[in-house]
Image 1 (cartoon, rainbow, N blue to C red):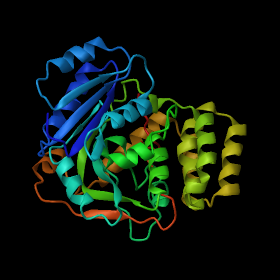
Image 2: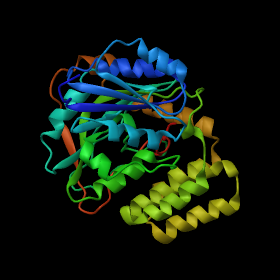
Image 3: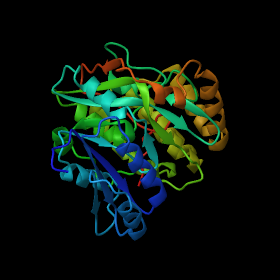
Image 4: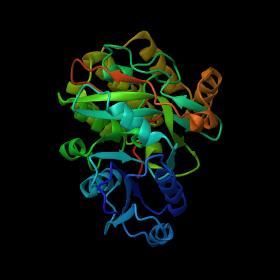
Length: 354
């Protein structure tokens, strides 16, 4: 490719050749072809290298790393390799709908800030259900940290952001890299730090543009529970969160990781932290109790049943693929430096994959 691309697509991967080939094909099938796809091989991975070598497309570039450094490091390497003014991330086990990048570029042109972070809704596909997240878009003037963390239901959050939905200026991603070594909340951590800059805003598109495959029998880091490290991360991140958002994260995301300890001491520590530095609501208390009392598998089944029943008029995957109109967008307001959060629909955790 000789022409400078409009968007660089960064895909970190390790030892999952079949999945990454599916992801790469969805990127190369975008309705805009002025892109490059940078696949970062996180450590020695000859099977993936061989599978990608069979894809004859000069827009595809493979960057091998000599040893594993984790997904955040691989993303940072991909950003350094990017030649386009925009970079979009795609996890190797997800896929994009064809209009994803075109829709986000159109949304970026409407942004007020010089460096918009453009995210989208996604289709969350589990073995039991399929539904669209986030359930709603930010309301005018709503702090982004609260939009993405504060619950209105017991088994789900309303706001959501996930790595494969994010497109951002390459300049911004080099200024604010992903935190290497952080195992969970990778997107949340990055977005909080990015949107705290005065020249950055979060823009959400209304359409679901990503298929998030949650194959629960496949090992992934987002299913591990390093709650102590994440608790320290939460404390360090408190300046970027409103009190309501801080309480919601402590009593839902962190508690969902810590509940497996079945420790009353841990139960009291997290509750005291939320009360001391946050502003819990009634639903936070109820959520906290159900996370500690209901086994995770049962909670996940209840969550999927509730969300699948309530998705109502939300578009299915075939409907989303037929969408050809430029979408409506919703800008996420951030009067103070508190933007977005990430990840997993139970409750609102970040799904850092590796």
